[in-house]
Image (tube, rainbow, N blue to C red; front, side):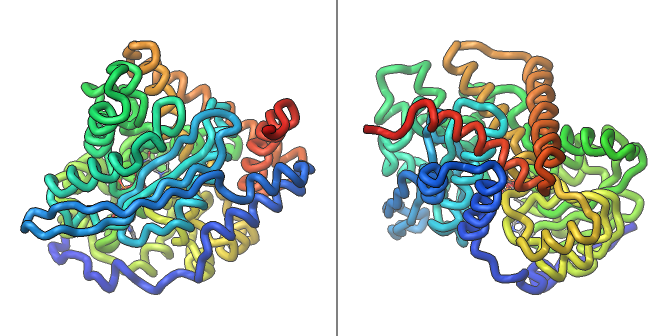
Length: 435
Ligand code: NAD
C-alpha cells in the first residue's frame, strides 16, 4: 500500500474538540476522589491550588540577529512527599493553566507510584519546530538560567515532555551546573532527568513511558482474558510515548494499523512497521509523506476499528464526537488529559475501558526516579535492572488502582486519584501544616 501524498493541514487539524478547561477538569476529579476517600477539607483546600507559580520572560538572540522575548512557566504543585517533579513542555499553546493542571497530575502520579516526589510542570511558549538547533539551545539555557535556584536536585527536578527531549535536558543540566550548582559536580546531575546516558541519564528512560503503557495493557489483557497476540492498535502522536508504545507492543504481536500526528493521519490495515516509522519520524520530523500508509482524515482515524487506542499527543483529544466514533475495547492514556470528561462518560457508558493517564503514563517519572537515584549514588544500572524495577512498580500500581476501584466502585481514573490522595493524606495527618 502506498500513497505519496502528504497529509493536509486541514486533515491534521480536523474539527476542534469540545471546549476544555484543563485545570478545572483536574480540580473536579480531585473533588470527586476527595469525596470517595473522605479527604479532610483542609487537605483538599491545599491541594486545590499549586504551591508556587513562576513566570519568567527572557530574551534570546535569534540566528538572524534579532532579539525575541520568550515566556516560560514553572508550576510547583506540591512537595509534601518530596521535591517537585515533572516535565518541561515546549509548545506554542502552553499556558499557565495547563502547567497547573499538569503539575497537579504529577503530584497524584508520584504518590500513586510511591515515589518520594511531589508534582511540578513547566514550559516555554514557542514552536520548537520553527527554531534552529542553536536557537533551541539558547532558549533552553536562558530559560534554565531564569529559573535559577527555583529548581535543584533536591528541590525541583524537571524532565522532558512534549517538544523537549534528552538533548534539551543535557543543555538544562549543563546550564544549572555552570551557574547555581557549580560546586557539586556529581550531585548536580540530578537537577533534571531524562538526560542522555553519557551525561548521567539512565538506560531505559527513552522508552520508559511507552514501556509503562504496555505493562498496563498487559495487566488489563490478563484481567480481561484478552489475547494481545494478533490484536490491533491505533495511536495518536508518534513522538516519544506513541512510538515506543507501538514498537514495544509489536513485539507482543500487536499491530499498529492507524497513526496520527500534528501533520495528519495514516492508515495501513496490514500494520505499520513501527521501527521504520520511528526512524522516518526521526529523519523527517513527522509521519507526513511516509510511503506505507494511506492518508485518512482525523474523523476516519477515530472511527478505525481496533482493539486498543493509545492517545499519545496532547490533552482534550477525545471529546463527545470522538468518544462516539471510537470502535475499540480499551483506551490507554499515554498522553496527559487526552479525554474530555464528556467524552469519558460516553466511553464508559459504551463499555470501553480507560486506563487513566496518572497510571498509564507513569513509567516515565518512575524511571526518572531510577535515574535520580543512580545520580545520587554515582551508579549505572543495567537495562535489565531498570526494566525489572519498572515492571514491578507498574504492576503494583495497576493493582492498587483496580483494587481501589473495586472496593469503592469507582471508575479507574477516580480510583487512581483516590490511592494517591490516601497516601498524601497520611503524610499531612502525621506532619500537619507549618508552623
Ligand atoms: P513528543 O513531543 O515526543 O510527541 C508528541 C506527538 O504528538 C508528536 O508526534 C506530535 O506530532 C503529536 N501532536 C502534536 N499536536 C498534535 C495534534 N494536534 N494532533 C495530533 N498529534 C499531535 O511528546 P511526548 O513526550 O511523546 O508526549 C506526548 C504526551 O505524553 C503528552 O501528553 C505528555 O505530557 C505525555 N507524557 C510524556 C512523558 C514522557 O516521558 N515524555 C511522560 C508522561 C506523559
